[in-house]
Image (tube, rainbow, N blue to C red; front, side, top):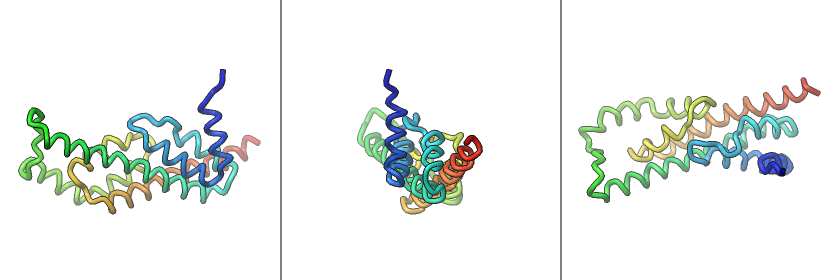
Length: 165
């Protein structure tokens, strides 16, 4: 039986740094379930190439891939606002407390969610899109957090494979 995941991961590694970018993007752009998880692909690529560059490039791809979920929330807001049967009250009275909190701590929250492997970032991005959180600070925090996470993965792969060999 052919394992498509292993074939895909091997091909990403052969693509070099472009493969790291694609691995980060594809791994983060899927909703709720990572098809090709970074904790598997990035250590393999990081063991074969410069782990610093792999972490930076994969983090960039992962940050942009995760950011796509913002547009799911933005689209949901548009759909909900057009439907008469769905009552999503996005009035200022109902969102002002959360809006103030998110504006104050949003970038830090995005960074923490992006840099932590245990949390699905999707649960954060969709509400950010619904509430029209500013795009540039959100994308910047996501990329920074994903770079930190992918640097960890890439160096873990480089150091780990050296120990094994």
